[in-house]
Length: 462
Image 1 (cartoon, rainbow, N blue to C red):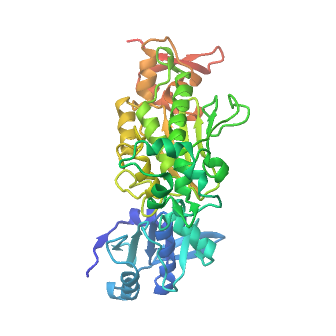
Image 2: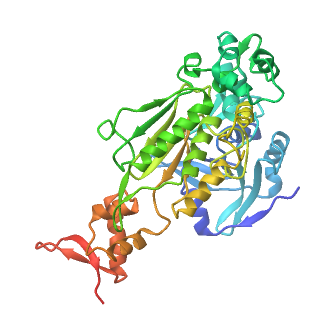
């Protein structure tokens, strides 16, 4: 199978070789053995994906690492690498190959784009690797492999049993209430056994989360929700900016989702923000908050000993869900790909009256659409080392420049602090650049102090 050859210019080569190896990027010389190369591919596949350039040398120049282009003399010289890739990782499934050539640099560089895979990817030495920074870390111990299987969604913690008697479910009020809606009518024990919510005489994690009266007593530190209100727009909330002690929400999953959504909405509706016409009530679409919070609780990794954290700032909401994105799902494809880490929980909670996940698989898409209807910027999804954070920004789709001009339509002048409050910009220097851009366009002018320094801005009179 022939591989596409793409010609690149001198500037593009410079862009590639000026980058540094990272969590998402690796350079290899053409002498690298195909077997060693599969370790990097395995590491990328088991993490968040990445790019691999084969044919770029690493050298040291006066203590600095420098990368130089030195590719294969012809495509056939890369056959050994390509053959072992295709044997271990079928071409086109999670990997793309391209040869890069240039008249300004020697040889062909093999560019491999590696995507996150659904299953665990093993290198040719039969070891699975994980990418951390610019390193490929072998995952050899049973605990490391178990963690990797959980992270990728190959296995789910929801099906494991807990050290508690089955009666914590059989006699639980949430289960008895739920069974009133089940057709045909069933006895609690029989129904739990049929649904695999009790296995070997013990309740499963899914069963406890869905039907126990107090899951947090059975699985402590794994299934709570914490809500924080920070009176600041800074990147990180502090004890000094915390409006009150964090709110803890417990209970079975159905009730927990409902309570978390209601409490978050109530706190948000009490907030005010300086707008173009004075202080305005902050408005987030309820459906966006509902879908993002529901998604965080249903799809979190319950094997991670941490709560779901909801942080409400003056200009945004952050929802942090324990665990990495499962399988092949990444922040780039999360709106188009589906892989339920907790399939039993998702399926069963959809059977509750007024289910929180009515449109299964459409939650985040609904949230993005709702934010757009209010002309707010879309949520930002960030994957961290052991969690996923959704940032719900209260920032208008309008540019900062448009927001400033709209403000000056009803106000005689604007200060840097006010500009940051109405645009969502947190940096004073960044806000200055917005003012300078408008000044250079002839739209605003500085209001000067006696010393000649600008302290405010106003519209230019025409």
